[in-house]
Length: 229
Picture 1 (cartoon, rainbow, N blue to C red):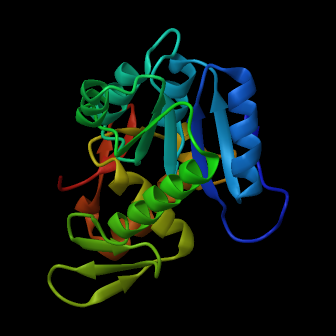
Picture 2 (tube, rainbow, N blue to C red):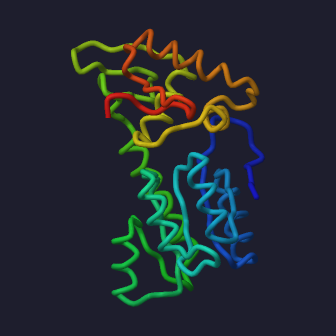
């Protein structure tokens, strides 16, 4: 279930919350929506895994003790699929060994229940800032994508200006460089509201025209991934 801020404006921050306590999950989702986030709430690990692999987020909060797929397993599966979104693990397990296990599994932060809500909000803001800093320049084979300015800084010197859609498509491929993205998945992530899969092929063509044929690799019968890994 998704919660979206009611105020208009630029793209809101996107947060995935995986929490099996419905009352706590609903409360936290409402709080984060009030802070300007678009929130997807998953009540079990399998749903959280599906959302984490199929949608782009700025931050994830994952409860450790989840049904179906537990939080540690969920986090490890996301990291194995090259999902690099910063994760805060929210858990009732507070021993040092538990925190170390969570961090070693790929979490950037670890908060023990019961927690102070202001501290949780501050930690999530810090993770979001860190994510923005890390995503400022993304390697794309021929150079580095600066998605803030929609430009690619070429390794050979100079830069190429992209349209907003071209930049979003290239960024989606670059943040998960080993993943093969199907056309329906790219439609959902990049081309909001579009229903014709040929638009994906069109923008791949545009990117290759500006940056060279090897910037995007075609996996026949499946989709596309970033070229020149």
